Image (tube, rainbow, N blue to C red; front, top):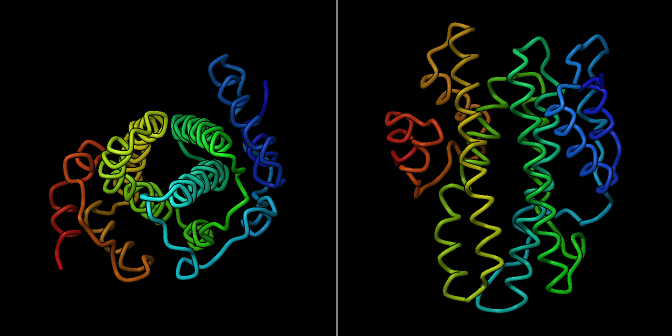
Length: 265
């Protein structure tokens, strides 16, 4: 048997991209084979110890270059940005299952599956970039994607509200229109990758919704009220801005009341 939390440490606390990918895939294979141990008798390391590669250079969102999908450079920049999102999502999933202990075993299984799928997404995007003669890390990337993890390192409900139900859910709103754009550009490979990612992200957000409601009920909170409170507390700017993909968000576990609140000006 191999301990899940030791695998999480091996993934999180070193900076090699290839190691993060390999550990994610190997851990999922061990889960499928019934060879994972979920014992957690070692202390949790600080989130400040999590490591990332030296490249790409990380910039504040306001300093990121504008992307225009009508140019080849813009297309390359877009796929590099999405690759960075998916790469960071690997560590976000691993940290979620690593940092919060004493939870149902299914919780850990769910987020390991997410980590493995995020690694697959990154690999698809990295290969697509290589076909465009670019390596991941050649361009600058958004420097704020890890901030919500750091800010919610001690609060499971806040982590679930902010990462799967806010950051990842945003992809459900914007990706369909982007896919349509790439259809018009004739980029069949790009369309296939983005469609695969969107299909998986619906499941990831749904798992976030499921566990958010599960732990709210366990802790005596009303989920819709608690979601609003946590977004107002942690989200910069008050709450996410629309438009929102109501139908896809409902599939991913959002209630009508939550969607109505998000759409309020």
